[in-house]
Length: 207
Image (tube, rainbow, N blue to C red; front, top):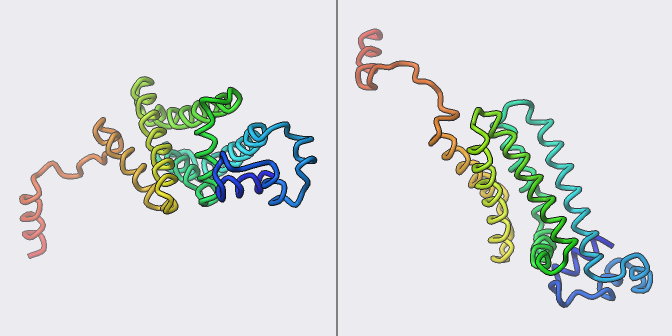
C-alpha cells in the first residue's frame, strides 16, 4: 500500500490521488484500504513514517561504516540523505507532498519536527566532536540541514531528477568552507619558509 501510495502521488499529484487509485495500484479493494486507513491523510502519514524509518536506518548504517572520524561521519549523514533509495523520482514526489501537507495536518507536522530534530542533532553532534563550541556547532548543523532540504526541494520542483553525486558534493564543499573559515580541518604547514625559497632549497639539494 505504501509503494502504491508513492506511485500514485508521483503519477497524479497529491490532490488528484484517491484511495481508489491507490487501491488499484496495490491490487486491493478501496474498502479494505479504508478499513485500515480512514483517510488519504492517514495513509500519507503511514507512508512518511515508513520513509523516515528507512532514512533513519540508512543513517545508522552509514555512520557505522564511517567509523569514528567526525568529518567522515558528517559525510555519512549527507550521503544517507542523498541515498539512491531516497532520491528516486517517485520518492521525492512523496516527500514534497508530505512537506506540502505539513501546515495543514498536525500529525504530519509532528513527523516533520521529528525529522528536523533528528537531522539537526546528528549533524550538531559531529560538529561538536570537531571541537566547535555548541553554539557554532548548532549554527553549522542548521546550515547543512537547510542545504540538504533545499537541494531536495529544488530537484523535486525542477522535475529533472536528483543528481546524487552533485548534491553530496555541494553540501560537502559547503561544510568544508565553513570549517575552514573557523580554522577546523586545516593541515598544519610542514615548512614555514615561503614556497619559492623551499623550491630553491630543493633545487640546491638535487643539483
